[in-house]
Length: 540
Image 1 (cartoon, rainbow, N blue to C red):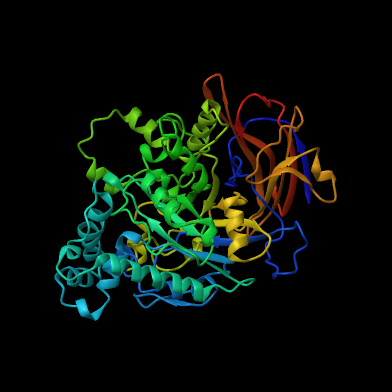
Image 2: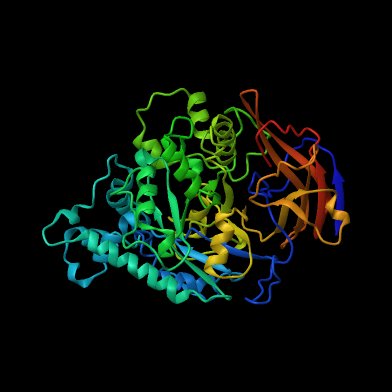
């Protein structure tokens, strides 16, 4: 193992290990132990995907998905999956946990339109006949999905206004199907299938989406969808009303694809009411910062900045927003600042400012980080670049056509440190932010504050570990320790991102802790933050 002790210095990132905030990152053995074999206080590293669509989602169905949630969970465990174009695909390594998160806004029509009773319904016929080519699928996407999730206020599907059709009952039935698939796939100590769905708020094309992930089988009778609850405050309020701890129900909401959020009230902590801030702090413990539609970690301050560390898998072009907001009159620099305001690092900084202004010491934006795929073919964890066959619109294309698509990528993964591979333990890790994002590699990672240069010790003891808060008793110059294990490629560098709020300003720096030109299999690095200001709220 390579041991390094460093003082603060700046540098650009050469390797994408996301080590940020109170979302401090983790390491060491990636093999999951069975329940009962973990010593008290010890935790294992488990890998998962919390953003997966199947044929239960209208857009996925239109673009050729045939996998059910049951088949998606089976794929996550290593079983081959046959695609609609005849190809068979398999994950390179099984996952430890997965959540299928189909669009709750289309639960009703996907339940009804796959029922033979409605095979002659005009609405359903148009959806079924829209499969088979990219052009037809895109037409279905534009005509039938976008109006459900981009209009403000949103309108229900036209078939839901027809006499004799009960779309709320249909939605509840599809939600029960989703739960059944997860409960059937869940195998404590071997594989965790979490119950979830996506709340798909996309007003004027701006992605304010949340994945809603539950602790257990105790969930509300109805999924909270954007059509009926179009504000994030109403999402949280419904969850508060119908997901009670005393009933065994607990839940987190995870914003994702925030590179296309484009600012807006969905992340307002500057003027929001106290109830909003409390609910945000309660439910939003994490943000998904890497998926197939780009990386959401950061943007440079200025639109023309180049050569900084925010260029990794940058994808700011949002076709739906461009079309729906074509007439917007806004200067390019102002548009850039607005877009940047909802990227992950910017949200963390806004949280520090809100904390400083708070009368009760609340940071409503204390977000850990996860990665996931946003697969629309029921293929959770399929992240190897060599196996990448394109995003949602790629199934019917040849290789040359796939290469011409926008700059999508295979997506990312989430690693969590949990006591065991069970629903409650995995959820505890997510809720406590003992989680981190990667762009696909399964890099083992631990990160936290230590009393001294912990790399000289046989066993590192953390004063505050991933997701935690630096204690008031920390030294005047706190020490942070990173332990990491390679995946397929050797480790090239270790860097820490630090953000701070002081004198009314948010500052941010990328600190190069160690670089390894020849690469390393394992590293342990301790770093002293000699610029630490105990009076300034900060994240690392």
